[in-house]
Each structure stands twice: as structure tokens, then as C-alpha cells.
Image (cartoon, rainbow, N blue to C red; front, side, top):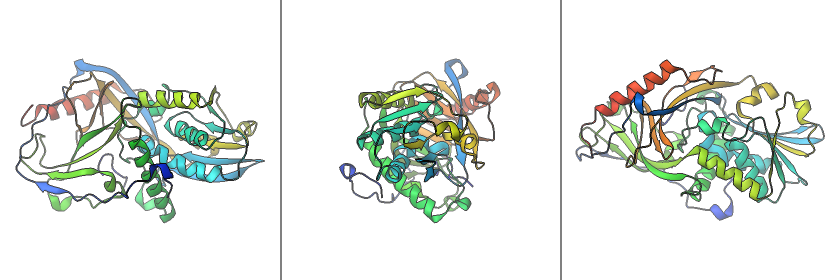
Length: 368
């Protein structure tokens, strides 16, 4: 099974915060809450998108190895958790690569993982060049929904205790790092989130590693919420307007003296020609072909983006898919298509997403 979407040590001294404690949800059965329903319809769709998540059942890869006379550090395979884990796995990667290093650094890939890796390299005092076939806004990261919550990431039967330790360290650092970036500058904000639960509390899944990062957790029973489902879990987490965030990170890299070079690599031999003695591989799905990783596969996620709606200040996820309100539009999604390499939105799939969400929000029991 997968770490279900929305269901579900390396911190720098400046970010030292009290350890996160597991949430203790309360069940509230009868305190009706009215929220504005999302206005979802085909006539309000402003764009459609399809992104290919770089999924590995065995989890992301953060590993260092010799590379001819150079050193190569891998940082890829984040599934649907690239935004969430970006700072964290980049922290793990630079901690593997930088000790004992001298001279400039190359980062391959300019999505969220490449950009955060580059920033940490710069913060450690090294010059960096990012090499990528595509720059924002033309990366897979630009298509991400932007919720801070690990999702679509691994198969628990295929990961090791050592990998779980990496995962926990990555979540911890990333959670702390994103908190100091909240606000208009990076397009990151805290938002109440509602997750559909099983009708029968006895069937609820047990806690997972991500639950400790759900703050202000409450279980709302029938009559305590407006959604047309029996029970929901309410918590608060961070959301990023991904295009805005990537644009600002590119700015930060450039202001710190970093360079971008548009270049594709067809083989490791081409990488070996780079002048930098230390290379970070942040190529996402491309790492499969470039380095022969047969475990990585695309998982397509399709999105319909609906006109922004002032006053819509919560997110929802459940059997209807997921709805994340952002300044650049309401993100409506919910597909998880293994092995699909076509990054073109399917009109029929988009129509199903819209129809499900339109019916869901039409079923509200009360409105603001």
C-alpha cells in the first residue's frame, strides 16, 4: 500500500524548535460549523494540468558515491512529496556531499529539490551552477498542489529501517524550514484542512509517521461539519503556491551568485565532463533513464484549476479527490495513474474530477 495522499537529525541550529508531539485528536459530535462551499464547475476552469510524480515504492534516494574523480550525491524519487520533503532531503544530501569538499558545486535539475539543494550549498559558502533541461515554470514541481503533507511516497513493505530514519529526519528539517518562509514573499500559508474519515471509527487506519505534523487536530462527527460525509479529521498545515515559491527560490539562488544553465544529459559520461568536482543529482523522474534506476516510475496526477474564490479558506481531501484554494486558482485533483508517461491532461479525466467535486460541494449541509 502507499502512504495515502492527504490521509494519511538534520535541523540547522538557527531552526531549533521544540520537538513535535503526536497530535491528540478530540472527537466533536454536535457543534455545526458552516463553511463556504467551493464554487466548482466546468465553466470556471481556467487551465488543466498533468504532472508525472517520480515514484519509487522503495522510497526516495539520498546516497553519495564516487564518480570517476568526482563525487556524486543522489537526491531524487520523492513521489507526491517533493514540495513537502524538498528542504529535508536536500539537507541530508548536502550533509553527505559537502564535508571535506572544496570548490564549486553542480546541481542537476531545477525543480523544488534542485533549488533547495542549491540554496543549502550556497548557505554553506559554495558557488553553485544548476544544469537543467527545463527551468521553472516548466518543471514538474510547478504542477504540484503544494500541500505540506507527505503523500504518494513509498510502499511500507519495501522500505528499510534505515530509510525510515532518513524519512523522519527529512520531514523534521523540512517542517521547520518551511515555517520560517511563511508569508507573501514565498507564497506559503497555514490553512485548515479537512480529511474524510471512515464512516465507522473502528475502521480508521492507525497513525502514520506524518501525523505528528498535523497541528490542531480534531475529529468532527455527524452534525459538526457541513460536508456530505459522516466524519472528517480537521488539522492545520502549510500550503505553497508552487509557481510563486519556485520563482522566489530561483531569485534567491541568483542573488547569492548562483548560475543556471539549460542543458540536458543523456548519460553519466556527459555529466562527468562538468568542471565541478561535486555533483548533486536532483533529476526526479529523469534519474531512471540517466542512472538506470528501474525502480522509479511515473505516476500521473491530473489537475483542473478553477477561478480563485475569495473567502475560501480551507482545503478538503477524500473520496471526491482534493481541493486546495490558492491565489492563482482552486486546485482540484485526485488521480494517481501508475506507469503513465503522457503529461497531457485527459479531458475525460478532468471532466470526472470536476463532476465529483461539483456534486460534493452541492451537498453541503449549510453555507456561510
